[in-house]
Image (tube, rainbow, N blue to C red; front, side):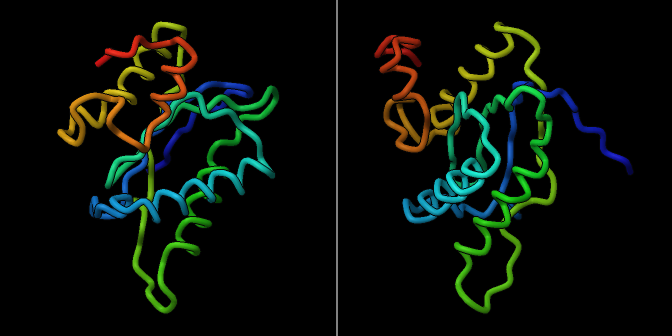
Length: 155
């Protein structure tokens, strides 16, 4: 089957990535820090803006905006997934970390953007992992709260 990906230079995209067999790899702060380092490394060579993000135990959601003239999110995801896998897996343990594919959605307008940002930040509450978005440590919610995008009691 041929998969078609959106190709919009400078576009904004919503992504969902899951771990292989939905294993709760990101249950530890250590794993989340390795993931953060993977993002830092890739962004240093292939910049993009992370507009919103949440890391759950077995999946993550995020919104990226690519630089003008650049539509290559696929390579960025391949590099992030590869870097994380190489630096997270104990030596000699060759177990798949990520599901092979991921979901992407091109953000169409401001309403679509706001709806997806809300979805990202409410996800820990939806999954019963937090009573409010503010309670979940692996989210961009605090950054949005400090910027005045959300009131303190949102969600």
